[in-house]
Image (cartoon, rainbow, N blue to C red):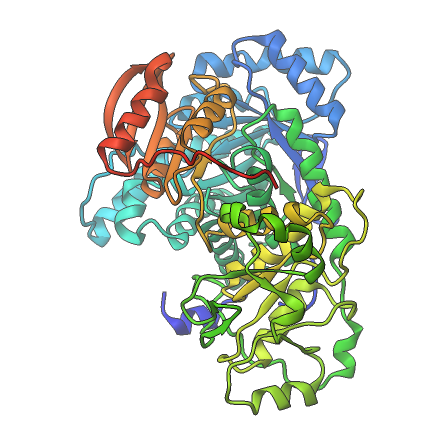
Length: 605
């Protein structure tokens, strides 16, 4: 995509003021998605679809917890046939939560499932294509022939969904783009968008519009760029022509624990902050019911922090051109400076600041804090605080040719993301920027950490994915050690500063061929000290091989209780008994010179 084409695109009405994107309403059973409806919460059960009682129990528990739409996998027609029994038992229990059939590879399973559930999720990357990682050149005629083949496969499902009043999700996954898309567009956000639009055009040709889009990826940067590009493309195609379809948000394979929540908050939260998203799923490698409170908290977090700015009417200074490309990551080009012996700005790593009070609290153990140590104290850093609406202050700092660290003062009555974007647009590029997670420092040791985590990950993660920021400070968490850990984990999840093992772990579902939660914890325990190594833990082959391209090593379910190991996207060891697989993974890491022995001494923070 050329710079001129990017310039013509817009994914957000105003990057400096919150406005929710207006979309058409799509009905999923009795639940409206998009339009004037609230942001809907979704999840997916992990039980085997052939086990009616287990599926019904899990669906009812999710609905009771506040899940508004529940997804069930349907690997084959046989699995899809049992959706009738699951649906009937759920309805007999007095629960009307809409059910979604998750389809990969099997159009015949989709046609069967559509008879029994309110929505069908199809993956354009594998609905009519088999991924073989083949490289070939397509002429325009050959590409057109491929699209005609897809049309023949997909149109029967479109007709059936239209006839029965079913909804559909056209859900692209970064890890399962077809070879055809990969060869023409590459492993890119543009390829993800084009893959979905091919299927959307077929639906529209048949006057079927009851569908939503999704653009999932395990890398928040890729996910954010893909959704932004999708929304921009839909806007360019024309809202008046009915292209304002709702958007489902999710970071696939986010993982578990604090890391999974941070990664989800960066990906989902950043898009919600820009008004994008009508329904969300937080995908955690944990029991599905634990996803619901996190998803609810993310939505509430946006509702509590998204604000408009009447201040704009009082400020006539031009905001300036964007200092970043929202459709492809490039870091803002500041100049390097040195503070407290640490270089920041320019091409240097993003640094972690703390307050003098927190520094004093951990000073006695800094040398033993390893990768979580504070680097620079805010009060002695020489950072200049500037309100981006203060024209005189902006003019004065821009007149200074010496690069100076700049941040924004607390309690200025602006949303963090919008304020720092505005600062980045007005501030000359040679001045580095210190990002804050909040403009309201916490003095409450009892404050809910989950809300602090979600706020910090959303605000800092959004800006880092925009390419803005040369240093960060966590002010929303009172505890010194916890605030430092959160800062480093956000940098890791945003792909900004890799200091520990990075895991890509999918949430469990009915396709999973081993216990994902237990296995992920075993792999973490054995490999968590490997700085900068990326390991993917995948329950099956739907996204496994595709996500291997982003990982150094992959651990993928190949058959029941059998594991295949990968290097990048290439399988190298097959059908390893599950009991031996973690040990064999360690051997593979050692064979490729990525192994180091774990440190003998660590300090809890």
